[in-house]
Length: 340
Image 1 (cartoon, one colour):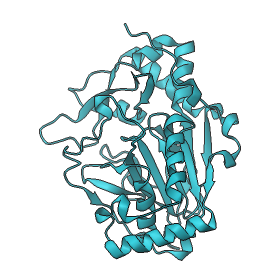
Image 2 (image 1 turned 120 degrees about the horizontal axis):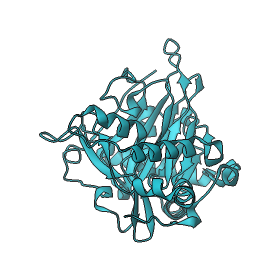
Image 3 (image 1 turned 60 degrees about the vertical axis):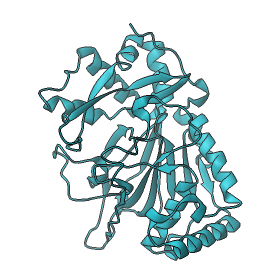
Image 4 (image 1 turned 180 degrees about the vertical axis):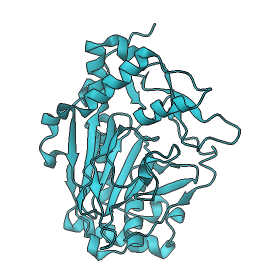
């Protein structure tokens, strides 16, 4: 019998604690923008392909210290940040991708995001239907996305272009939700410490089943690790050979969704063109509000995505490690969709 404990209270927050956007918005100063531009030009002189650019190819002699402080805050503090100040109109898409990649390399090492080995991904309407059992959230257009976690230490988004309405990014504090469940409904919290089935969305390794198991909550060396994608957990039940969700498990998952959806537990932010957002995937769940594109006018919401492995975390449970030699990791590609 698992007896869950309160974890990492210093990382807890509620919506009222982060209502002031200046707490989590880091605006680049003019001299830092100049440094970013110089780093971009240097990186492009090495190669126009982000896959060939390492951290040393994107030198930030002054800004790197600020990014290191942000990385520490992501892991040991609030868990999310918005970086603002880059003039989107100054750069074309490939230059913006290189700027984003370069900043990301100072926060962590890239992690493959899907079966294609994308280490730089696209979040935009890719024509996939909501009822497609193999569609992933970054491929769906228009619809709101519920609070969930991705598959890495840090998750980053950069806005290339917004739609004509909606599309706010939302973040909820997993630590607060976990600790509230431990305090109020410990039996539900304990159930989520047991392995839960997830749908692979058709991206399982060859010869493997279409589902896998990971606990929603894991306590590891005093830290909390969270992996929760409610739609994928529920979708796992389409596989006859997947473990059946228990009634207690269903109640526990519903309670976690309810707490994340509670306005007291989350905050919404606008991502303007040029903005970057980074979150601690284990402490912060993220989602988005519904949005509308105007495809005829070329006004289509388009974000780039990074999954990163941070050096601040020196120890992780086995199923939260970056398995570079895995089926996904061996391919290492970049998605470069052009929209609008």
